[in-house]
Amino acid sequence: MIRKAFIMTLKAGNEVEYEKRHQPIWPSLQSTLLDHGVTNYSIFLHPNGRQLFAYAEIENEERWNSIAQTDVCREWWAHMGELMETNDDMSPVAVDCREVFHIDKS
Image 1: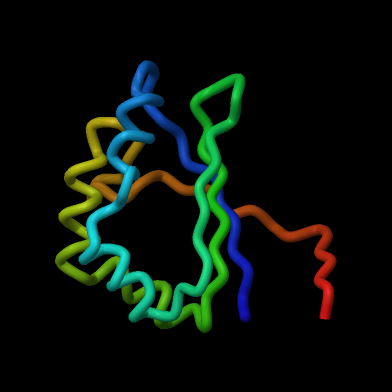
Image 2 (image 1 turned 180 degrees about the vertical axis):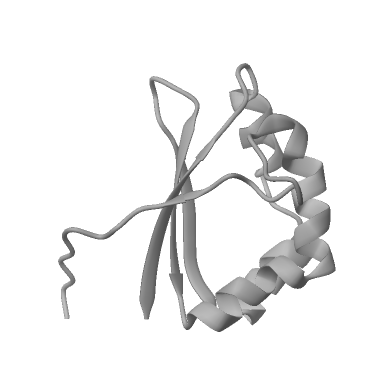
């Protein structure tokens, strides 16, 4: 299991709408994530700003990266693009975080 964390940023004033569009996410997007080896995925909104902290547990990087090539992912990016800072391909600008500590009850 690979743990990933990254930061994304909302455009000002879009916090409520961002949360609304995730309640729930599209069933087809959820299925795509699960089918591509995502076993756990959470997004948190920083209380004093527009930063989103995302945490995902995935089976492997190749399957994770291939999600971006799916139609439903690209449609989701277009759906969310007006709310977030995005790259030219409409993917969210995301800054990977490096894990510095982990504890797991095994």
